[in-house]
Every structure is written in C-alpha cells, then in structure tokens.
Amino acid sequence: MNFAGLLKALGWLTISFLYAYIFGGRIPYFIFYTSLGVLAAAFLCSRVNSRVAGHCYTEAVTAQAGRKVKVIVEVKNNSGWPLPWVQYWIQMPGTFCLPDNLGCYTFSLGPHEKKVISEDLECKLRGNYTWGHGLIKTGDIFGIFTRAKQNGEHRQITVLPEVCDLGPDLGVVAGLQFGETAVSLHTSRSGTGYLGVRRYDAGDPMSRIHWKASARTQHLLVKEFQEQELMEFCIYLDLNEDNHAGSGPGGSLEKAVSLAASLAFMGMRSGYGVGLIAFGPERKVIPVGYGKGNFNLILKTLVDIQPGKGFNFGEVVGHELPLLRKNRCAMVITGRVDGRLAEGLAWLKARGQESSVFALKTETFGSTGVDTAEQAGNVSRLKITGIPVAWVAKDSDLRLTFRGLDYEIG
Image (cartoon, rainbow, N blue to C red; front, side):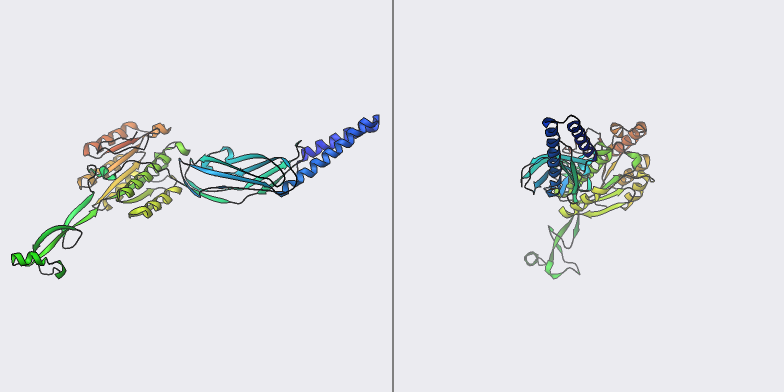
C-alpha cells in the first residue's frame, strides 16, 4: 500500500468535508461525496493487483557473448476489472549490462486480458546467471493507491564466451601450408597408411603377408604401413590479474577468453586435438581431446574462469612446456611476454616443436604500468627464433584467416 497516497486521500477528504460542513449547500457536499466515491473506487481498483500474474523467460537457456537472445514477457489480468496501468519490474541477468540489472515493462490491461512483449537483448558478458524474480505494481488511474507483490520464478541462463571464425585451418600455426595435413609419420607393422611390401621378419603376423607378391618373387613379403599421428594443440591462457587491464566486455580478459574459445573451435573444425590450461586462482586443465564434445567442455570451463594474483605466468608456463608431447603445438595467450616465457618457447623451438604467442596490448585496454620496451624486446627475440607473435589490441577484430607464420590480428 502506498501510505503517501493514502495520506493525500485522507487529507483531501478532510478538506472537502470541512468545506461542506462550514459553508453547507449542495455543491460542497456533492464534491465531498464524489471525492469519497472516487477514492473508494480507486481503493477497490488497487486490490485487483492480487489477480495479476506475470512471468518472463528467454527462448534459450544457453547463449553466446556478442549474440542476442529473445526475452519474452507475459502479463495477464485474471480479474473482471480493467487495469489502467501495470508495471512489471524484472531482475535481469547481468550479461545484459542494464542499469541495476532491472527491466521495467508497463501495460494497460482489460478484463481477463493477456499481453506478451518480446525484445532481443545482447549478451555482453559470459557467465552463469540466476534471474527472473519480478515485482508487479498496479493501482488506480490517479496513482493514489498502489500495491505491489512479488512475482516470477528464478531461472538460469549460461552465456558462453564469444567464438569468432579465425579461418579454415589451424595447422598453419604449426608452420604448415594451407591444406597440408598436420601429422607426424613413422613406419609400423600395422596402421592405416599403406606404403608397400617388405621381406618377412620373425614375429610378423600371418594376416600381413602379401600372398600374391610372395608368389611372384618366391619370397615371403609382408605389407608395410605408415602410422599417422594428428597434430595436437595446447592453449596456455594467462589469468594473472596484473597482466590484464580493463573490465567488463571491453577488458583484456574477455578478449583473451574469446580468443581461446575461437582457437579451440578452429582446432575442432580442422579435426585436430585441442587442450586448455588456464593459469588463475585455480589451475583449470582440459586434456587434449577431439571433436565437439571436447570443444564444449573447453567452452564450459571458460564460462566461469576469473583472474587472480600470486603467480608468475611466464615461470609456471616455463615449467609446463617440457611436459608437452612431441606432436603438440603450444599456443600462448598472455598480457605480458617476459624473459622466462621467451626462454621456454625458444627451448621448445630448439626441440623441434612449434608454438605461437598471442600478446595482448594491455595499454590499449587502459593499463598504465606496462614495460613496453621489455615486452617488445622479448617479442623480437621470439620472432628471431622463428616463433610467430600476434599482437591483440582492444579494437582488434579476431575474425581473420591465418596466412602463414608471420601474421597479425587486427
């Protein structure tokens, strides 16, 4: 109940009654009784609030940052009284970045009337959000008596990181030409790639004997195969708070997470194995895997990761790189290329393994404590070694096609 409106109504009735009592006559008393009737009708109208129901929902419970989702609002008047106005306040997901995360919808409803409003809202932030709790307000046409009641039920929506199309083939990161198969090959007595025949050795299975060739040469010959091991990629994501700048959708962390998701998508589409190691308050590890299921697992892991402090990214990655398998390529996403990281990647290159670095230009995201000279020196050291480095600024467009080892984003 609006107590301020109630006090105004009582004040008006008191004034009109005193006016009629003091001066008498039909007109003063007509004003008083008319005012009494109007206020009584307004009070009864405000009681209809208990017969109004509303709910809000989205067409999908999973969305992607940078995309729009359809929000649908339904409000129904279950009474036989018309309602001049109804306000429906809804707690919206934080991903929409609305003021105070509130949405307000205003209706006028006839008896037993139902209205539906839908609008497309852009998801700007990744994360898991609880939303849907609402407040319905209604009252008389004069706004003297208003009532409010809680309405709606809690709902969930998951906003995945933005995934950009980086190009048709992730293999070029490992130094391959476009369309070349990213495999490591070695001969074996079994496998999928047929090479030819060779002389029989003790221990070769009988099923591998090439009988026709053996009959022609009068010697036992067996089929020779070549095993193919697909190239695999491991993404190292820097979540050190000191190496990032900005906040919200325009922060460097969201850019880095989107880039990691895009690389994982690119690898999945190319048919390569992709894994993720996110270094933050908690070390998140997704083992190298293949297919859509592995990609979805990486996306779900990236939804909730947050930055932290208390570790040196270059140092911890330097300890991880020697554990990288021979057929794997390292892809590092960081806001600071320090000497320890450059040393570890140079060692990996000397071992014959490829790597690439995506360096965030944190100064474009608002950082003022960046040692640009040190970073530029380490980046030059990597390029001299043959390791590609892509600079990623705030306004960089991640949608690109890799064109060999020397590429830049944006």
